[in-house]
Length: 203
Image (cartoon, rainbow, N blue to C red; front, top):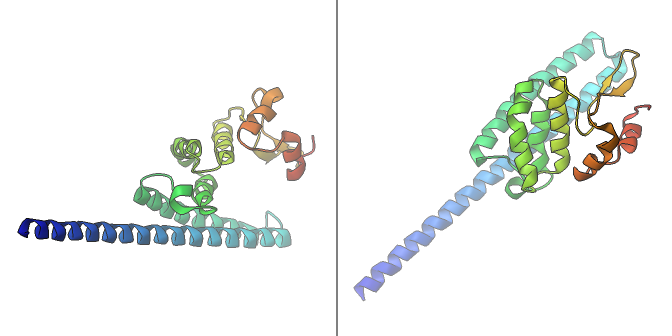
């Protein structure tokens, strides 16, 4: 009887420990979701404000330059926070960790960085997350092309657009352009013609 009683006590203690750990983990993930939500809301608010300033004053105006610098400073702060979250959850904070649409936030912040080393560092993680259905495949396409263009290589999926010497929107060179739509389809991207039309690129 004494042995059974001790076993029951140990089982209760073990169950209590599991419950406490589960509660702690749930609270930690709730905090991660809250931080990602705050990052996303501030990111969108500041970018909308910048767009309004640029439309009002023009791209080269001091007001626009100051607003762009504010965006850059914010992006650095957000990247630092996202890197802390990645370290905390032990990988990309994807669908199974934070749910949708918050699974997109870390990717957006990584993509916003102006540091090519950041893109190259996290491309493998983003790719793995997409392969595990933790992130939409389209994100991999955009980040892959971003890295390619920064290295002055031809992009794979045709996602990267720039302003050419004539002041018009244009697409960076694409490798095997004849089959780009096939590759885009594999990444759940719309056909190239539809994308260019939506982005205001005349071809």
